[in-house]
Amino acid sequence: MPSAKDWPLLLAGPIVRRVEPNFVSVWVALKEPRAVRLSVFDAPVDTGPGDALFTEPAALISGVTRTVRVGENLHIAVAEAAPKPDAPFEDPLLPGHIYAYNVSFGPLDSDPFAATEDLRSLLLLRDHR
Image 1 (cartoon, one colour):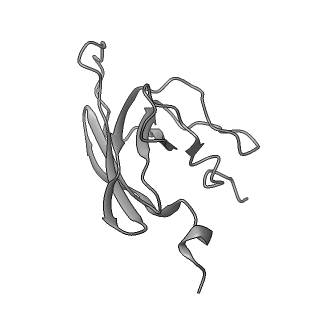
Image 2 (cartoon, rainbow, N blue to C red):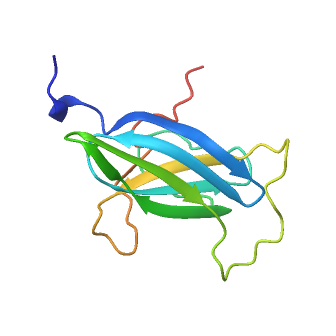
């Protein structure tokens, strides 16, 4: 059996947990503690080739949280994306509209948040046609 050091960072998820007109939450389970950012985009997004961190376009809404340790090599988080209190956000998330999202991961001590991995860099956004 492989040791925990051989496990991927993302053990389970992302799983969309909740969507409201101005709020989205996604659950993830990681092997290590991390800061977790959820970014929601206004349309399907072409992430392009490669495995570099995905940075464009600007997110419609986003939010950062920290994982909680629930086992020696198990850290979970429910990342929540919502408008910032001082940001204009007149248009709610619409039923039937297709949105895209990305989950990115960074060190717990980075302020502001600095992603070191995301779904693209972990090769989870590849198109397998």
